[in-house]
Image (tube, rainbow, N blue to C red; front, side, top):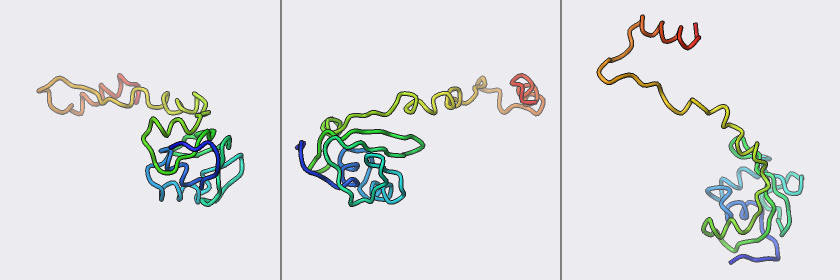
Length: 131
């Protein structure tokens, strides 16, 4: 059930709307100075209300949210997404895309050729421009 008024602890809200996987991880993030409410560093017991702006530093990303609802307890993802507006810029969401392109797949060799010999390895490195 989504509440449109009142207040809730920031660590509990982050857990309820599924920003963090567990309440203890949420609590540790707040204690580690990775959560800001209205540009203020907060403690886990700090209360959030409707229309508060929350900045979360998580996994190398700076996620920005606006609180639009409060939950009594953790809810499913579709319900949880109704409790906030995501203001995270697209360039922040795609931060590692350029870095990751081309690193997801390993190189392929035809089946049955075995491992490259030392001469093959040198040719491959020369071709790639590593030497």
